[in-house]
Image (tube, rainbow, N blue to C red; front, side, top):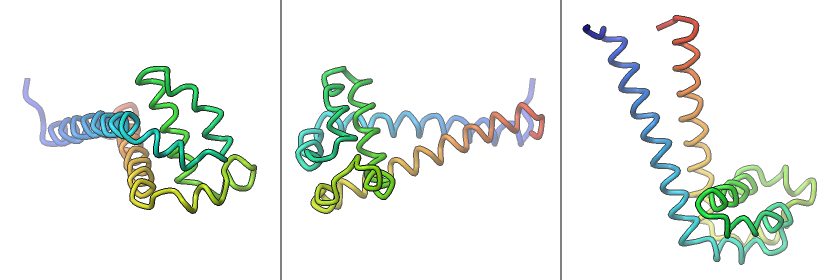
Length: 128
């Protein structure tokens, strides 16, 4: 059985996409285990994060859940400020380099998920 050029391209894109998602999860776990104290110290007055802080002791899944909440606050602060889930002072004093990393990782993750769903949809509707 021989793969066509299109099949090879889709396979490579799918494998790179899948590997990218695992790399992002690895980076997020590294940040969760090394920088979580710093992040929680800077978000002490943000209920959307502090209500999830006990999940920190829940192993890797709990840490991913907590860092996901922090990433959500950093990526869409207006949403959380409007409903009182975040404190403006906390967001202002959060380290800029860490905030940038979290926002970039979130958008890259969404992009990779979008590519993955695109490949699945294209295969399902027999576009490729």
